Image 1 (cartoon, rainbow, N blue to C red):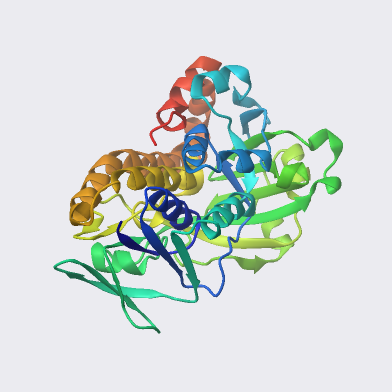
Image 2: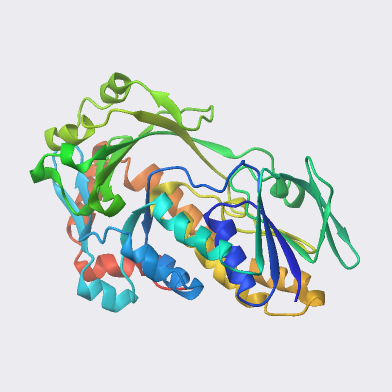
Amino acid sequence: MAKFVIAGGGIGGLATALSIARHGHQVEVLERKESFAELGAGIQIAPNGFHALDRLGIGAPVKSGAVHVDALRLLDARSAQSLAVLPLGPAYRRRFGNPYAVVHRGDLYAPLLRACRGHAGITLRAGVEVCGYENTPSGVRVLLSTAPPIEADGLIGADGLRSLVREHVVGDGAPRVSGHTIHRAVVPMEQVPRALRWNSVTLWAGPRWHFVHYPIAGGSKLNLAITRDDGSRVAVSGVPTERDHVLSGFPDMHATARRLLELGQDWRTWVLCDRPPVDAWTDGRVVLMGDAAHPMLQYAAQGACMALEDAVTLGDLLDCPSHQIADRFARFNAARRERTAHAQNVALWMGDTLYHASGAEADERNSLLSGLSTEDIMDAVSPFHGSRA
């Protein structure tokens, strides 16, 4: 039995705690915020994410609270031409072994938190920030901002895009600002016209912008997210935004999409950030996972799924005695870096090229996608939707 400290109590941190504790180790999760809570609205979970949740023993409660959408749909945002549709019914589930579903982030986080609180091997501490570490001959000394250090056998940085642990492991400075601004809102479903209550993840691709909407919270709410490639270079997070400002930015939108966009009231804005892939996420008995290791833009809908895969893989590798931890961290790094780097790069390409094409490039994209069969699209998504956890 070894003792691990996890910096960060988000989805990735709790999943990792549960995975490691299920192999018999003691885990202490340190969350810098004053409480364990997950903010945000909708999140998409592909089959690879559900495979990992099944391994952690919480797949069933997450699925029960999810909206099992019928399809993924890509439309031209100005003409409403259907470019590609991936049905998510029996054929899709047979191929990938699990559903594709959407949830409110809290409906994913709550089962993880309950499982961690119910596990004797896991201790949760809020209001505690990891500010550094020191590798020692027999372990790692975890340095805290406002409390005495903790002696542990291993430290896992699960503290997100702006990870303080990463500052010491990688030292690559601030995240990369993408130049993409996203506005998000959630609408009660009773306010949505019945004809527009589509049970799908629908993406409208426009010139240098795109609009996504899908039901969440058991179908009681509609999640709206609209993104513009506007060259923004200052990162902002969750800033309240005037409705008129959001609506004025998309004058060439098809009337159907416009009706949905106009439903949003309490808009908040983010400027998206990520980091380029790196090869090394370890330093002796310290390792990064999830967004601390490989933060990606949202466009492939794989950020949470990659973190869940990380958690399961890391837990399996840590079925070992204490003196092997540094080696197992290195093996985890080697096992995960190619797949996660591919996800980072695909997400970047989707945002820059696939969703935001204009002019002749948009025409070429539309022609190419319109010729794809359902089997072609399943082949295209299979590198991610297939299980690797």
